[in-house]
Image (cartoon, rainbow, N blue to C red):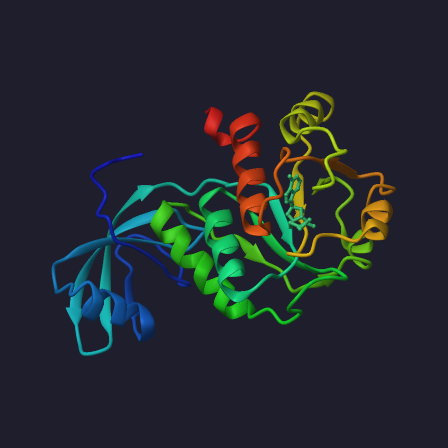
Length: 250
Ligand code: SAH
């Protein structure tokens, strides 16, 4: 990764190509012009998840809009396959934390799951998407994790892709250690992608866990002897995966 890139990165929806000129308005323009106080001639990079990352200069700056002139492509687009994270929505700040950390830790897909003890069934997908974009800009990802609409735990098996393993984080202390479950899975199915499922503050019910462990694509795993907060468990599982089988080893 080049260190000569400007620190400021902006995710945009438009296609990116040589000599493109983008018009940026709304919150992005406010961020560049009023928060960062950038002016004409200042440089940043832009990415859209499809066309790589481009160096751009502020060509013109108005009150709440500015034009960005693309100069050169600094990074070519590449796939950023990563684990999926399924989580029971917890309190607002906790969900924001999960989305931000999961994005930094390379999660490719975030999926809220409504379980028996889920506190809040309402999830503001737009806010979570904005959270993911901000985290992706900061951590230099080239893609934004997809955030799916909530699904009930009971309906999950019918929507689960058969070519992906699901590892449920089971705090009862009876499941094998997560690192071993990941290593064993990587040995037996080296190319099979994974997803992690974290329960709500009150945990899964015994009947939920019993039903889950009958699913062919599912494994249960422990994150050690301490009971972690859901957001800690999500973070720890993704970090463990990246360290054992993910891109931290590259
Ligand atoms: N039922 C717990 C609280 C649940 S913690 C209690 O006794 O208070 C929220 C979620 O984090 C759990 O459902 C589980 O998915 C995950 N989790 C927390 N600690 C864990 C551990 N030591 N091992 C595996 N998963 C854990």
